[in-house]
Length: 195
Figure 1 (cartoon, rainbow, N blue to C red):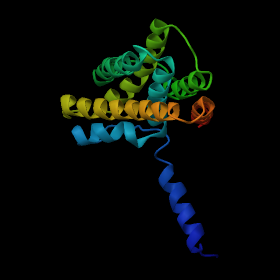
Figure 2 (figure 1 turned 30 degrees about the horizontal axis):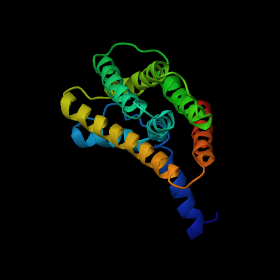
Figure 3 (figure 1 turned 90 degrees about the horizontal axis):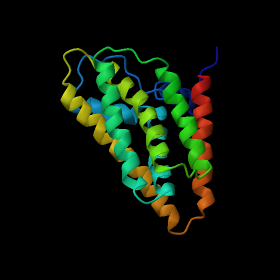
Figure 4 (figure 1 turned 90 degrees about the vertical axis):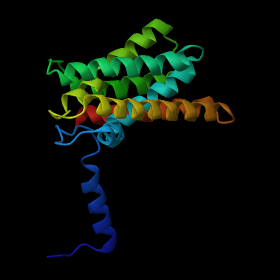
């Protein structure tokens, strides 16, 4: 029997550690509070990529989209969270979340200029799935208010990160790099749909 060398052991440990971050779904931790809500969107690649993509796309769209698209996402996510918390059924949640990564990435890659209303409706649809996942996993007896405030703040921070990246890209990087980033997000969405 062979023992793992130092590098191989670290790689194996890293791969084992990554297995839980592809999908940020915690299946109802017994103690859920502000910190847990804050950590939830940051603990999964699916949520991070979708929320950053919203920020990227909002900058590409420009104008009022810069604040309306992220705001639509957050408010609709809260509505989805409420549905999940109340135990209502929303079909295809995982598919909707993974699909949001793929489609939002494609929209950034194509620098899509959908109308503002259509952009907000699409972002809202995806937010419903993300919010539902947050709410459905909230433990009975958890502080819904504090948990929700945590995941709203983390979501806003991820949107702001996407906005910051896109605005920085405007200051000297070619626009195609942002579109390449969108393509990478879309490719991640394909991966998420496959796992």
